[in-house]
Length: 537
Image (cartoon, rainbow, N blue to C red; front, side, top):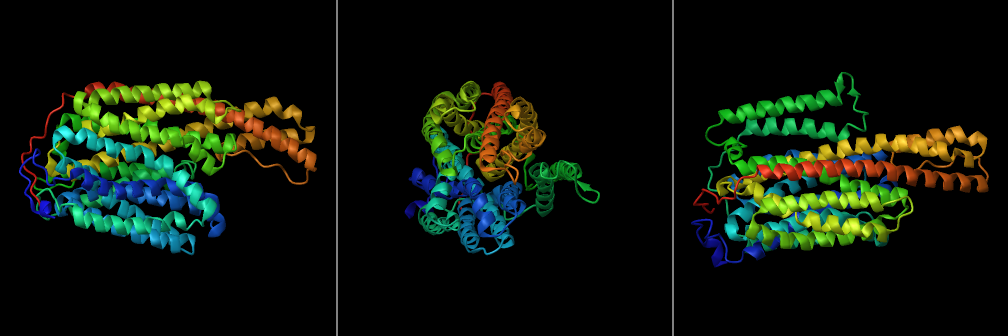
């Protein structure tokens, strides 16, 4: 424990002699928060039955976590600068553990939603502290490898979530997807208090409360509108309130927030000086565009495997698991390459290769394709993903004053979250619109295989299935033979129509990713931070 009392004199003399142990401990909580963002997705049918919940209520259990998590990252990143990264991390871990227990004990949809919102708050508290700590405990020459571990978890956790969730649902109840966090959280809190040094940036204990209110309200409006837009048909929510008005109000509040930050000379919530660091400004834009194109890959692929090919949640997770493993391994090597050649070039190569992998999937995926036929595209995507997360984070944070690490971490994380939410909304709408068109066309081609009295209903119900991403059910009152025929034709129609829509969506994602790769040319030459000190708590 003597290392905890050591002084921080420069970036080359970090706060601990065991930085990798410290990072490993902090990444456990980081992994938990990311895992819980995806593990609940596979439990939607089980939650509907187990809690007697509606589909919309269960969707809010998922979206509520994402909403709270996304809108608080700027604030919680700044809190780490003020009160200490370890302190905020431990509070986040304890809060996440308590919230997980409350989720597992929830007896109604309302209680589960409240507990999930608390999980989102706790996840937002701990998330930025990991990036901030990397800038503080690692010298510049080792940060690429450190961000490599960070990138491995960013890529691995969301993909392995469905595997873990599917396994737990197959052998235990849905409550264990939350209870499993409790022992891990307790152990992580103890390890953090024992081995993680109580570092902070040396700022005074002051928080811009007006800035917090403006940022939270503005981000809430934007994120809520993007998440809920499709559910309300991008129209009216209630009375005069519409999705468009909520998003516009959010944007206006964010503009007011930026103007307010310009007036805060002493300690703004989001120091605008960060954006005078060229690589930070460019990195935020590249991260936004990258996440916009990246987020749709697994979203669409999981729908394809489950809805068009009929895979179970566990089988789907196992199909994409090699992709996650390659991402994890690739991130470690990408971090080392970033240390040697610079994150900019590794990032450009990774994003370009990601677009190539998508085009390979477009060529190989079909209505009757096996998992093996997807392997070449998934392999390329896995390797490419590993070459993007770590270099992106390293290039973005290059040159940021360690005393502003928390604020920088919160801003960059928020930017990518907004990009991901926008990407999900846009690509979901594109997939749905394209799917309705392809399903209508394919249904017309196959309607002749059904009795004449079923053809019109078949065409209409097939086109409507594009709104729900699942094939329609057979009408009541049919004979067993007619039901089997209807289901067979419907499944064939949906699989073929979905593949057509998926190809369009993947090509759109590839175009966005190529744009992100081109934006990487805007990065300047790497430079070390100008800050010489990062005082310790």
